[in-house]
Image (tube, rainbow, N blue to C red):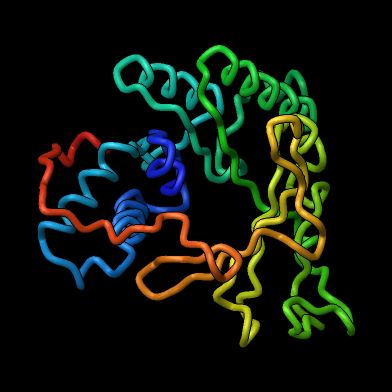
Length: 255
């Protein structure tokens, strides 16, 4: 999200029921600064904070919403704040519309919701990103002897999820324009600080995007201070976040 905001001036509306807004804000500020917030001057901190506050707003996470309530909120926010991207995290924390769910059943309900989100994107020119978890059986799948990545053995470590491994099944990848699997080997002594992005689907390849090869995902290496490198060499932010100017912003505007 932050790279998209910095590089393309994209503003984000975020609903994250599993992460407190202040924690996300702190992480975004640290990544903008490319170092821990306690290690920078007040001037640098305020400049990074003002950028984050100006590019990210958060939907109240102290109550639950149906997908349609979230879309209504997203429309009302759009009327008074021009943003371009909406994150829903995660899908299984979003409440069901009981009447519609009873009418359609779970499978068709998800299809209806995902179809209406596509319509929302077309009507508003807002890109919607949905995070979802894998099913339990998929999380039990592990690498077998001989599997390697970057020369390191992976035997016994969890395998990256396939499109059908998402909770709810392949209907999510069918409805989505793009489908990514974000995977980490959190218990691997040499790969624990890597985040691997497997691009499983790109609907429109004419504009330059394409799926990644199975053994060659996009590789993010986390470093000190919340910064990261892509494929061990490219820093997508490419700046320190330091400045001599402070922009005053009302902190309350972020919520």
